[in-house]
Image (cartoon, rainbow, N blue to C red; front, top):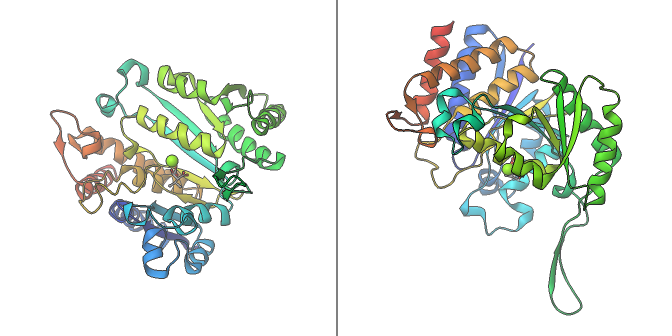
Length: 361
Ligand code: IPM
Ligand code: MG
């Protein structure tokens, strides 16, 4: 059966890196008869410019009809002064929420070839392979009430609400325990239960769900300590599960452990493994349009799509091997460049992955 992919390149470097991932998908589609069909849509600032909204109805329809979504990035200087309700980021958040993509998987793997690109000492990060499971459709990102109000004394006050219901915590906990079962069976739940009632409930519910997974060793950590531990001794972790905002922050830290945020893919899944796949980095407006962005995070996101939504671990594995091979050569995009290497742009890096796929076939 035809597998429909909604491709939403978005803003900034989005179109450049998505083009490389599409090259890889097109190649494998032909080579392995994957029966993929790609359809393009607008999201973020690009959608705002064309339709006055970062999340047009036709994009929602396209995404809902598709089996999976491949997204580049959203946002940029151009739209920073817009009202928050129509900012590019609202398009991405709307999509996550409308499609109920509550389970965000953000793996951080250090490729040995990139060890010198990490700002941390080699012994701290060598062999790193951790996974952050971030709750993606709740918490303070979506809690009501929210806004900026005028107080009686004439002063403005900004406010947001951190909320999690038991059912929201339960479903993300199940996802996290289940992915931990497929890895090294250690799960660390990150909260701020010493200060925030909402995450005190989080800890209770995760502990309760843990009784159904006796084969997974569960621990709990406060988020400030987790941030410190990720930089101090990241290899102590296997899987981390946490709230939307803590996951946003911790996944940027874990990305940098691997040398570059340009290497990290992500999957955002609903209850049926329909998913949206995107690099965890943003739109990088400072380098947009220059053809220098690292496309590997997006290419690896396409691999996650093949694995999680389309159950094609064989095809996913081929992409991952090809990325590994491409890194064995001396070509590097600027973000992972180190001395003695040859600096290349997005297209050359994409081509290197395709060549490696051809060689490996
Ligand atoms: C991410 C990004 C988004 C988020 C932004 C672009 C809304 O930082 O996916 O981590 O905060 O979730
Ligand atoms: Mg982020």
